[in-house]
Image (cartoon, rainbow, N blue to C red; front, side, top):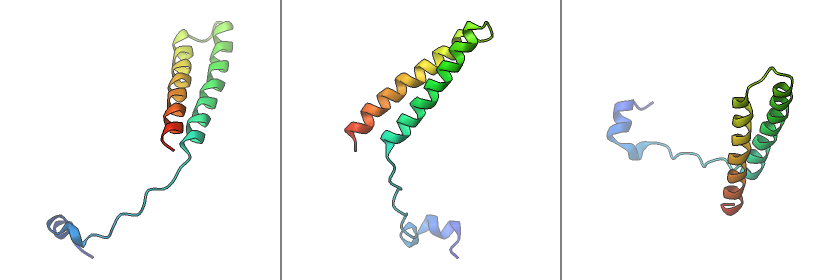
Length: 78
């Protein structure tokens, strides 16, 4: 087992890094947007009953907008 000092002194002796896992980012962003949409519905109901604040609605709306931008990015970079 090589020591950290020897690996820093001779980086060519390290094992190669494994390849990055492939992920469907379109699905990931879509799932995140779906969760924010559920949160938006819940916060709207809470706001209408007088128990929630406008900040939570803004956070969920921002999550949906950023997820939409992520979907556009994921579609362009498949």
